[in-house]
Image (cartoon, rainbow, N blue to C red; front, top):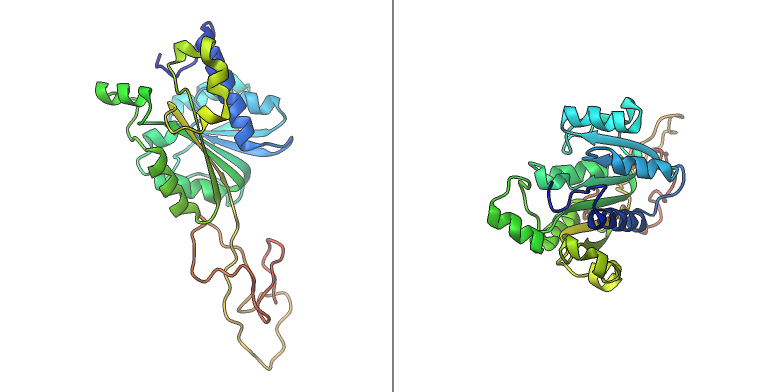
Length: 268
């Protein structure tokens, strides 16, 4: 068992699990009936927690044995699928919420995983990973542990997220600033917003509120009437894929351009 794994019979482990769930709820702010994907769902314990709160849950694991265990734990094999964080087997904007659960520490290409998360999520993404600046990260790096393939500092991960998601609002929080065995005495300190705002916790979380962008093309003038039922050049459409800043983004289109409208393609 690692320093951060939960043991049902251990008080510090139970306290850590409860604090982690409380923080995830604050960051995700889920509504009853919302759909959520957890990438790197492990045993499925958090999926069950979200399902008990009224969410529609789906899990993804890169380990086929873990897929079977999580499906058995949830009592429904169809809720957990096999796949890779950098190539999610889902349509664009398929889920309201998405949780990247520590899988970036073992992802070969974390930027690809972030881009895929932005593609399939509609509203919000929460990232959870290990913090190399924490006491836990220091111990693991000195040991040369194989538990973490890639260490991402809070600032490095924040810069990567801004590069992928552009102007989206990003909030950071950390957990387990002190050793886990101290939790029974220091729980209130660990739960304070001041301590969770420090960059030294063993687990670091990022909340990303996704913002859609509108790309426009110049309108072409024509003396012929436009054919009905087909979008014309210059029509508004929402681009799929990661939200990347673009010099051509227009927040207030001038007269003659397409106004903001529904998500579906619509002709001017």
